[in-house]
Amino acid sequence: MTVEVFKTNVNKRKYAKILLDHIHKTFSGYNANFDLDDCDNILRVQCKKGTIRSKALILFLKDFGYHAEVLVD
Image: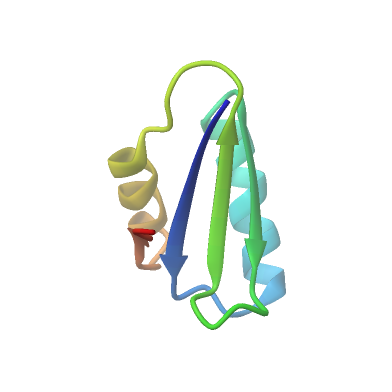
């Protein structure tokens, strides 16, 4: 299983839910969730098979007007 964590500027639960719906429809095999209680408004993405296309996901969120970057350990 592959896991990637992103720092985002998503800060409203209603928008997070909409984005999650779109992520799950667009990126098959991804299981994503937001942690908006974290200071970095974390987006956590898991993929059981294959790899997570971080750049594609970042561009996808940008199309919705949001910023995301891979959070480095």
